[in-house]
Amino acid sequence: MLPKGGIPLTLYDLVAPGLDLRGEPRYRIAEIRAADPLGADAMLAALPAMNAAADVPALTVALRALVPDPDRVAALSVVDALAAMRDLGILLGSLKRHGTEPVPAVPEVLPVLEELGRRTDMVPRDTVHHYTTWNPLGARQRMYTGDRMEASLQDAVRMVFPSLVAALGTCAELARLEPYDPGFALCLDRTAQHVQAMVDSIDFTVANVSPVFFAQEMRSYFEEIDVAGHEYLGPAAAQVPLWLVDLTLWQCDRSNPKYDAFLRESVQYSLPSWRDHYARHQGGTSAVSKLSAAISWEAVDRLPQQLAASAVSLARVLRILKTFRARHMTIARKAYSEDVRLYDMGSGGAPIELLRSVLDLTRDNETLVRRSVERPNTP
Ligand code: HEM
Image 1: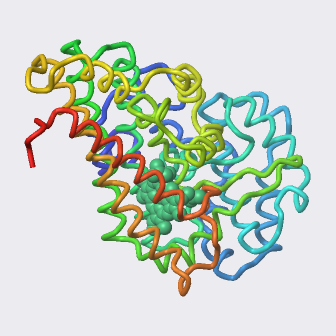
Image 2: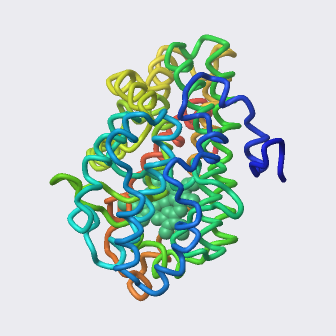
């Protein structure tokens, strides 16, 4: 589909209109996708061929050719700076995939990565958002391999971004409410609608991306790189901020040390306003804890109607999260099975066992909420 200006849209852009009207440059997705501040379009169209040939000299020359001079970086808008990081980033990951640490290979890129990180208030390398949401569609799409399955993996992440942004709003509102408030169940029902996109996304992934392709073709492009003595992870789907939803539902006070540590590491790869959301709610009381406390004061067979509605809605969102995680774990297990995997660790820096532990936490919280409204004699 080609609307005014010739920028292709996906169905999901149409489902979540208005994101770019919020005054946040990072949500001006169409503009970021359209931007080519380094004049990289032609060079990056040749990237899949360079990667297929493992042509490190050509990749090094390409990266060196794209590095802008400091005056140029200083003049970039945030929209252009995000696009510039996207275009340098895909070359960083490509070089690393072929065994070359990119910053020592092209030292002049270091001050540029640091400045682009500062300008955009993000880490000094590309993230999953650069690689997917901010990546153009159609002929200008930046890809490591050019494979249809890589495009599907990118689409799977693209399709959840607007929903997660919307869920951030409903979850922040939820944190201000008590389970007796009518708005509590309403916020949860809206959140449930948004989170359903994660289930759609993993179903789409299972249908279109083979675990062997992920494990043996894609995984190596998401390796960490060294930027001034600090290791930064590649633009992997594990950075998709589902934690934005977990945080106020249950994670802030009902987590475990492994998931806490994973989140602390992951949060740095997210947008500034999302990091603020994390800082604001980290020490708060979760929806599950508020609901459990409220129910403990009531007789189960005479629960106020509003409280029962809140519990039903909370259990529903947790069930959707559980469904995503169960299906996601099935594909992740296949990709990291002994006979298929090239790496022991996930590209988000955690082992596969993390997924089991987060699924267990999600399921335990869902069971707790569901049981709290079941009558004692209900089988
Ligand atoms: C073949 C496809 C995929 C595989 C093999 C895979 C594998 C993994 C693995 C091993 C982890 C553990 C952390 C780590 O990587 O270090 C992880 C985490 C995660 N992945 Fe994926 N993943 C895939 C696709 C996706 C997609 C399409 C999404 C979302 C649109 C996604 C969202 C997440 C999230 C949110 C986490 C953090 C843990 C959680 O919240 O449960 N993954 N993934």
